[in-house]
Length: 331
Ligand SMILES: [Zn+2]
Image (cartoon, rainbow, N blue to C red):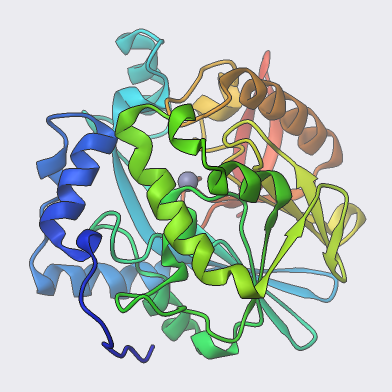
């Protein structure tokens, strides 16, 4: 990726300010967990991540590749703050996780069909968390030039999905792409009242969403559930995590792959306990209803899914299990 410096740094570019914002976003006491790792360590993580986590699956004419943007490190309580600690610990244990902080993978989907190279979400960029923002390395490992990306479709405008839109120099990371976001999502984040809808510690989400969305406005098309974006890519309503959250259905029938974004975020909590309310769901009741509707439909249809935060590379199926569901990774 070619980066050119043309202007003075903005406030959020400073690592100190970025950590301060993270402290405000994730709660006091967590910020220093995100201290910058040594450079050598970062490079090793990038290289193994970019190669190990990649998977390519086919749906008709669509070649679908899951790429890693790295991972988030989140306080365990964020996944279901109203649930008792022992129940949460049991769910994490079932997912092979433990401890006060949980790694949450970041799986960006690349779809190649005809002349189009389409990214579903673009990762966190360099301003959110030091363990994230690796999409450029993953694309390079996959042999895809960022300038060759023709379309970017966002599931929603949270930092880990949209802040990779612009690079360190406030230029578009994918300069030749057309951009697509749901009309409801655009209207929500670009509203003059958005800060009043968010707790103070999440105001950084809105400031960041507006910073990125303003940059793509000249190249942006807003879309609605039920629309076909390009041949074989259909918009599916999955609102609740954010007011305009969408998922993308790729291909048809049994071959279909559903790129879920953050409709289902954890391999045990979202599947076995869809009633639990993660702190990051902005419309918790709607998010629960969306999860249940999607789980039932996906288990019945047997379609493959890619979840942005499901265990890397995020691809699998939904199976019925007891009174709930289970995530079955693709073998
Ligand atoms: Zn996310």
